[in-house]
Length: 392
Ligand SMILES: *Cc1c(COP(=O)(O)O)cnc(C)c1O
Image (cartoon, rainbow, N blue to C red):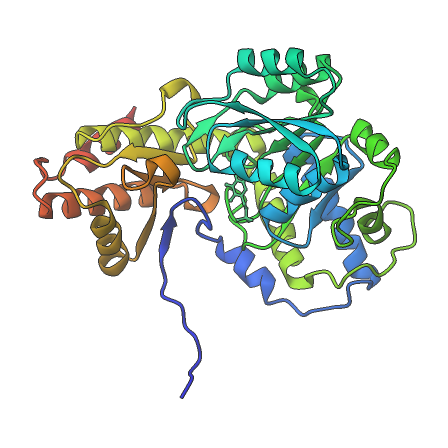
């Protein structure tokens, strides 16, 4: 007979979802109220205000889409692009490839600017593409590429795009809460994020933000947005300011409680403190990994602290290591994707999961499993190096 599903208690140190703060889990269990209840509407306004701070923006059109990060991505493309438009997509990993798919499904043309996986987007290549395509309407890129552990220079890329009269679409799914996202300073026009990475919330919601320039472009469309559900004009009927809130879809009421709690936790900690915490634990993790003779794939100057990509040493069965960590330690780390499949592990230090206990646990577990596979590592070296890094 089917029984109650009791999930195992894991430590989630992969590319997301990350460990969820128990405060956020308990917020989910609060009583469900109506999605037009005045008390719920009051909470929605707080969510919007806290999202503006997390994104560092004054954009009025800042709200959570009731669907995962991929829906936030799609919302940006379908609202800004019409059939026949041209978009420049910078790709340096998995998610840039999905952007291309989105552009093409809008009936628009994607001009690809490609960089190697493990490298940031090269602003010189973008500049060349902008000069070669003066009719481009949009530039899209990923700020924090979760597939490779690389952070690109969003401010420089947004400035270049604006200088050529292009709107920007920026994927900040993995960056918000882990490293700085500054929509207004960058001059980014359409930004989307996710809840299950550095916000340590449950999956299923995608915060988005649109600049006034982006809103003007949406209002100037000559055709309807192809997606009814993601049409921001309609979504605003429910989330908008100073309007009577109208039913658009039934909001995921309890999931939004959890987002409210996650944003409150981030506000209590402070953005700068959260970024500094990610850097501190990343430094200790890298010290431990390198003490085991493992090497980081990404250059230090563009590494994401929240997503650490490390090479699998020769002679080690990478899938077997992950399977053992999961079975015997309840520890999840991520595999490589695309050209990096089988060659790397992706170790996440996202949000609530980014702490000293997890760093030491991960290093100790990984070291033991590698030693069992015959790796030549002195027992205790990984944790020793991390503890030395913490001691400064
Ligand atoms: C996780 C992720 C997404 C997709 O988010 P989902 O919630 O899985 O749909 C998009 N972009 C990046 C960079 C991500 O890391």
